[in-house]
Image 1 (tube, rainbow, N blue to C red):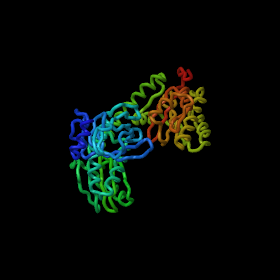
Image 2 (cartoon, rainbow, N blue to C red):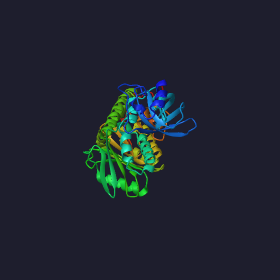
Image 3 (cartoon, rainbow, N blue to C red):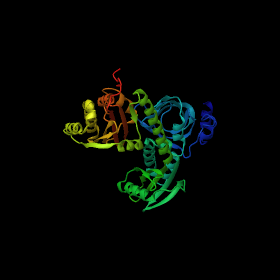
Image 4 (cartoon, one colour):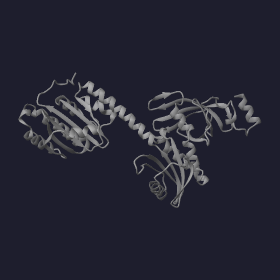
Length: 418
């Protein structure tokens, strides 16, 4: 620290980032080029712009007018912020070292940057933003840079961006400024986005799927004036595939767990398995559930269509159909139903086009009595599971399909009340 004081007196123009004493040396020391722009927020909510000149996993070297010493928060995303404290006498002029006190994430709190946050602050995103903003009039550069960084950082896909391309848009034409030149973009969609951004004079973002369905792009359009702007394009295809793989793994774990907990009665099924269930057997009756008075009508139609060998289970089957229809009306605004006979069982199918049950809610929504959210089945689900011999569920953003099987001989009941 004494060295910093002497340097400020004798060599005030020498850059701190070149000094081995400024930020701890090592393989994780990074000097972003150009510096990454952030905001420091003090305890009173006052914000100070700052540039990250150098960093490692425990320290930042910042150029800022924020008072030192002092404690500040750097907000990167809704569920991601960093607490830092300026180190007195380490640095000179407006360049100082800030120790990382804690990193707050949705998953918990840490004392240092993990790889995701480190790459966010030291990686290429800041470079791309800087490259596009340098073509703006000087008085607009900081404003647009901060807005675009904020939009990118709020994106849940930011940690998975691998490939980027920066283009300038002017008079309906694009010119590549930097990034991967051979990245093939859907330019018709890009032009539509830029026309909207320049026409409305505001940032526009859209996720675009290529015409062949093989690529997914994250587009950000920033207007410069009424006829020109900048486009940041990211290929996020690999990210989407990774997310799908993770979702499939989660669903497989849920499938195994729920089947085990319910003694093999409850099955989470995919679209292919669902189609097979819908095609088996012979249709006996069908209808819609669009209003409350459709429920008693459906019970009557079902009773009239049930074969006599299922008469001893008529009440249970009708009750489960009513519960399923009530859920459809409550959570999806309506749906359709049908009854089919496949050999020695009756199959009740209820479908809707609602938003589905969230993966995180599946276990509680299907197994916990009296549990209900906007997207859950509520206590009616456990009742259906109690009476049906087997229950098959396929749910997602495009809707839910519920299949209930009833044999003509009742198997042992699952005791969900224990």
